[in-house]
Image (cartoon, rainbow, N blue to C red):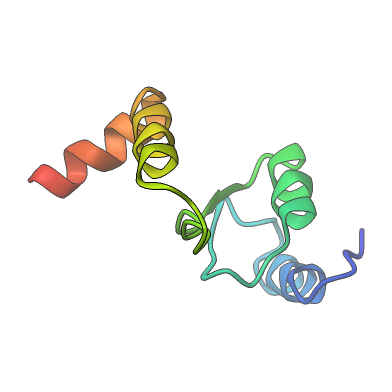
Amino acid sequence: MMLASPGGPMLEQVEQRLGQPPQRLVDTHYATQQDIVDFAARGIKVYTPVPPNKKEATAESQRKRAWRRQRTRSGQAVAGADER
């Protein structure tokens, strides 16, 4: 399977070298949302930073976004890691 973004060829090279797909990938805003969905469909976890708030976002919308993020298990795990 060849993805349109650079994530596709990179993933194929890793699979060829290791003989199996990776279990996890770390991304720094390079993969597209569709790439991440495609990787997840293949059972690959993708770790990437949360996108920054838009410049025009109000303080209230930023607060709500942070609150929603903390309500998820993965958000709680990350918040717990930050407190250590």
